[in-house]
Image (cartoon, rainbow, N blue to C red; front, top):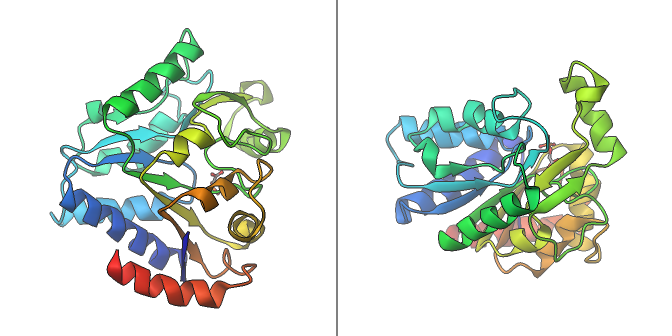
Length: 258
Ligand code: PGA
């Protein structure tokens, strides 16, 4: 794991975006795994800026997203398909047909999940997987208690997640209780992982993921077993790391070599 600690989330987002831009330049057909949530938004803005400045093109890039609410159509303003269109895809030159998000209205969720994994495999696997981290250490919708070997499947959201999401929906009955999510095992197959974490609300989760034991209680801790995982944190999110000075010094050298 490399831990890049920046003064602000803007700086961390810029560095992470530079890593992605460099990868797209090197391989215009790169396969990206993408994430939703508030965390990656500044990085997506940086990626869009690079496209606008004609530094890079996403014309041949293919993407697969981590998860989608069960029961929401992609046109719903809280669906993750909608989020991706409005926060990234509408601002880069990617072909919409090359962007993939799980179908929250699939007739048969098992078939949907199996087909999604098969598509990724056929594309040669995910080259770079973008992740946020929940304050409970989750990655994608792999809540505490998710097997570290889990695959893409239907998951039950925790009461806390359901409560947190209620503000985005008109009625409590509309708040999804389930989602389709790539598993921890699926995520671990990505060749490179970029996890973003900002704010003091994420400090305990980052410390558990990096310096705690590997446990399904904090699913991000599985990344300790990944050979090319990068955490881009602001100082607040990194504040509970015991070895933060060492990580920051080491990452500087690693970034220069990456
Ligand atoms: P956030 O969510 O980016 O909105 O904090 C992160 C996550 O739950 O993965």
